[in-house]
Image (tube, rainbow, N blue to C red; front, side):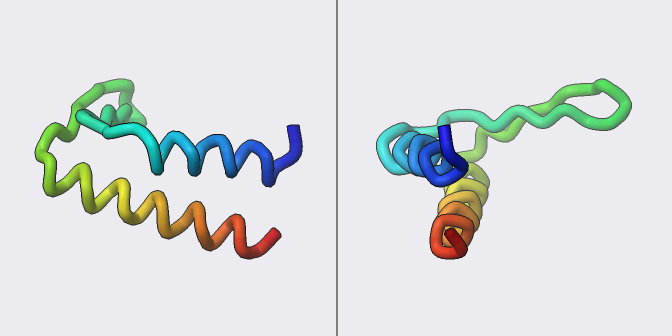
Length: 58
């Protein structure tokens, strides 16, 4: 699978699924999560913007 194909698959997930929780794994092995809908939206918006940037570079 090419890089573009992989990015398009991830983009499709970002566009067509709803994230309900983000899991964080810290360098010391501890884990935590984000469940706040506003924080999740901000993170997802940033991911979508970065995805578009990377696709436009190809």
